[in-house]
Length: 105
Image: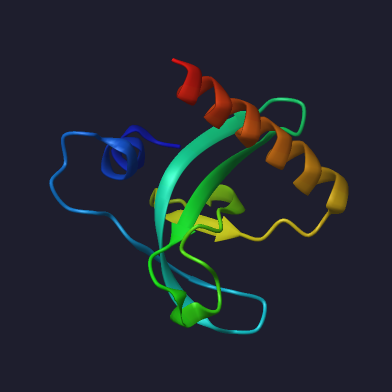
């Protein structure tokens, strides 16, 4: 993730909530808030964890969604679903360990 997006999404000093609009597999658009990102070297990809901001999308506001994170040539974020079960399990495990370590700190 480029520095601009890192600062935009995860700067604790910002006053407003940053929202991203995503489209699910059913074509439903909804807003999410980025909560964490990480690169998983074994998978050679970067991922982002987001939370839906309201339940009108059919997703709970406590249901973390994990997405593949890339950027276009202008540095704009591109978010994609994870459709491989093994990849999703690895990413879910990595984020679970990350959040558990944050709670213990």
